[in-house]
Length: 325
Image (tube, rainbow, N blue to C red; front, side):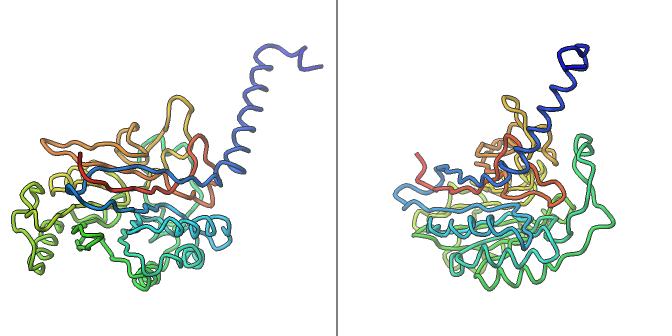
């Protein structure tokens, strides 16, 4: 029997199956390697400040054989960023650090800060993708422990600062930055209760610090300061706490932008409790009477057991910080 002779329901089923197969082929063979640089401007610097280029990297889920991805990340060094912010999930294999070394080596000496994601602790496992529709994914007992200490040691070699449940400061192109961050909230490793004391300790060691934090408007004009919060997973409890602590800019990853999206609709899942419309890109997060810019990266990789993206290409973000208007 020819296809034309099939019942209408059978013809529809064949058409849907063919479309699904084509979409999967595109997502697994083409789109997941369409690494994209997204460029945004964020007006948070004091008046008269020089622009500052921040390269936001997230969710590489690196395996040692992913040479094309490593080469693309290396090429980003040509942007000459003033700062690199890494929001976690760097590892995607027990030997993932080999690929991270190959990708990040050109950034040696470039200031950087980082936080952990769950896949810096635990290796990937096969999961039923439909479980994500039931809410954020949980811990899988059979996950392999990864060598996060070796990853941290390499980042220290690069000169990058660890922000996991702590704070640090940097001076970049005439602007003073205060950074605070949390360990992976998706696994419940965040300690928001430590942020206030971490900032207090940071300012106590800063002879030019202002003890009126977190009210950014009261910072001395002779000490232009920008406050940045960094997390892997953008859970609302974390974002709200960051805003309360005076963050003007917040950076996160984890969501993969939904990874498989519907054109015209967007992400189907977020793998956390952030609203779907904020699952990737630059937006404003409001809590109480405060607000902050939020950039959620769609990330550069996928699990090696779910190597597909659709209507959501992998990305890095070049954020140019400029003076407030």
